Length: 301
Image (cartoon, rainbow, N blue to C red):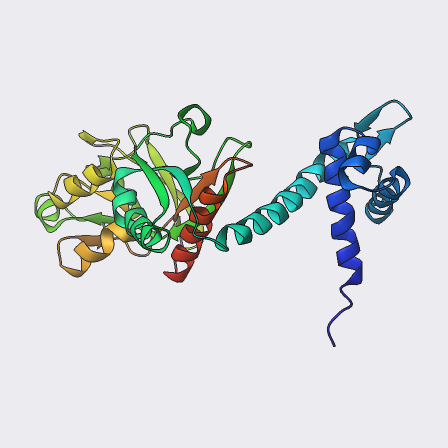
């Protein structure tokens, strides 16, 4: 027998009320926005406080402010409310042919390999939505550039942005047969310090890997430094050095014998690629966001 859904539905309703009160700035304003009495709104907040075992707001007849617990809980409640609104607007958009415009940015290399094919499929499904694609290896300011979606690698430092992971790519150490004819292949992790590396990104000096369950630090040095992932692959294929490559770069050259995997027992960290956007985005951008997330999950990434 399935559990009774009533308690969780009541909690979700109270969370939506709390988020509305916070955004309105007072219990009275929140009650007006919801078309409820102030007493009903206060009841919902008290129910949450009882459930959580801590006060969420300090209120009087003239003032309203959040406690530290209220500030922390507000983020979850507002996210719930935004997702509900987004879902309804998204369904409304699907009743007619979706129209609008989306501005998206991604790197040249990953964009050409993984994002561009998905965008072409998106255009076939939603031909009335205009796409503005900016390929740039630098992390641009989304707000300043008027960009709604960005594809970025690695964790985000900006807490004002929402990040959804698109793919998690395994990585591996690789070199070309031409390089290995001139340099002795590393037999141990210590041997990696003697290799010539194609350094990417330019700031990289080392990385951490796992060997037999133990973390090891691998120093990176070389005569070729680049800020382009496409250039990194080209230099490695040309025999200019060793590099840590994501699977989407290494798979085909490895199968063709153009690359050799080094020290397969060394576990290098996967590369996480995120789809990034602001807290609020338009309906066309939401459609593209959901399309890209579903496309990468379908690919098994």
